[in-house]
Length: 110
Image (cartoon, rainbow, N blue to C red; front, side):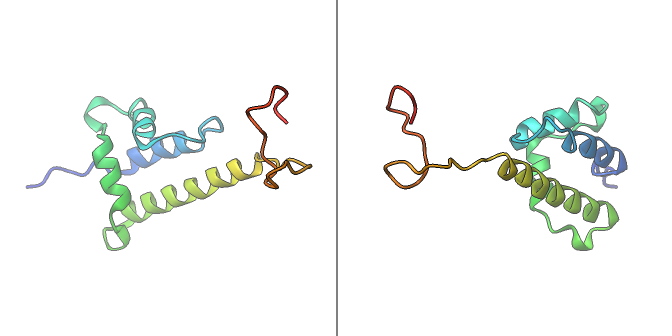
């Protein structure tokens, strides 16, 4: 008999709590797993490898929990991308290279 999956409602609840944290924008998979594991009992924690496998899996036919997990991850990724792009402000005047980038070699950064 196979052991019960750790991908369950408890995991989803904790993952959602971590993912909607306003201060979380650019976490690696490993950092994200650490944050989620901090919310779980030791016997419910997962490895980064397991998390990556879950993200790569096609859960469309694996039941409601798998579908919820995929939706949660996709939505979180979209939302975090929006936050990142919203906070990028283009420089008004273009630099010599025409890209509007700061010249990090100059003393005043312009």
